[in-house]
Image 1 (cartoon, protein in one colour):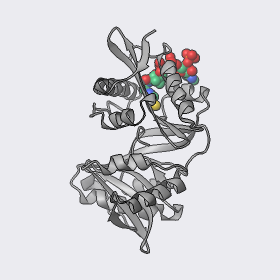
Image 2 (cartoon, rainbow, N blue to C red):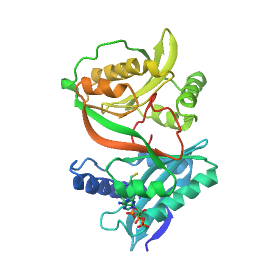
Image 3 (cartoon, rainbow, N blue to C red):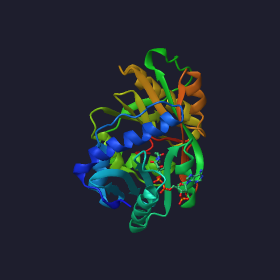
Image 4 (cartoon, rainbow, N blue to C red):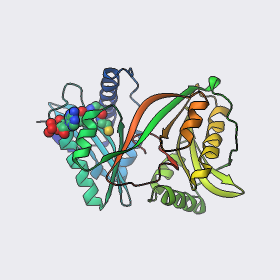
Length: 297
Ligand SMILES: CC(C)(COP(=O)(O)OP(=O)(O)OC[C@H]1O[C@@H](n2cnc3c(N)ncnc32)[C@H](O)[C@@H]1OP(=O)(O)O)[C@@H](O)C(=O)NCCC(=O)NCCS
């Protein structure tokens, strides 16, 4: 059995290479082709600095064969990554890494556990169900070439930039508590510090009723909205910002419980990857929230 130990900052780049390899092995096996490229481990480094109790790796003979990362916000523990090297799966390594990150949940006093995994991975879902996390909400990665996206008809919301003033952070806290049940202030600070990310408040009748982030890559999310009836207008507003940029592709993770999924399909977006939210209880209102990605949530 490999050695399971806390990861250090200098190892995160190699760990992310393993994550990309493990994702591509899985998606190729299921006919989706290779979807992952190794990216800078910026969010992972942020999580490690914030709370090292959630970052673990499995090492065998100097080689990283497994990696796990969890973060906690208030009572919510979220498993951002759990990956075992192809060829080393089914040997108990994932289970061992999961145990360590679950200890992070109890140390931090988190009572709700959640994660987003591949809807077609029976192994990961089987493992999580054993630990009390049940599949709850389907989530589709929707994608389109920017040039081919049809014009969105219907009401939209006004977008104004989010700043880092206390009043803005307090508004973000209220929106997160209303939609997810917890504050994610540290994660907003992380996003707002990224120059490639545009964060906006969404306004209805001059009132801030939601927020959305759009990356320079054309990716939308996270997005949160106070009332479900405003979700279509919020999504159209975020789409308009993405379309006004110069990214080649527009992409977004849309929960199947949200009215926005039908809009994505009618705009000509294709479903590229089916994911599923798993959790210990019905936490958060996924009719009013889009995750940024399966790790950030
Ligand atoms: C998911 C993953 C992390 C699990 O790690 P692993 O080392 O392969 O898993 P383990 O050997 O510790 O445990 C596998 C468990 O899966 C479960 N499992 C496997 N096949 C299953 C099936 N068909 N139905 C239900 N449960 C199943 C069992 O609980 C099994 O444990 P057991 O052998 O003690 O019965 C790993 O397979 C992986 O990296 N997969 C590809 C990437 C991925 O999907 N990651 C999850 C992202 S959230």
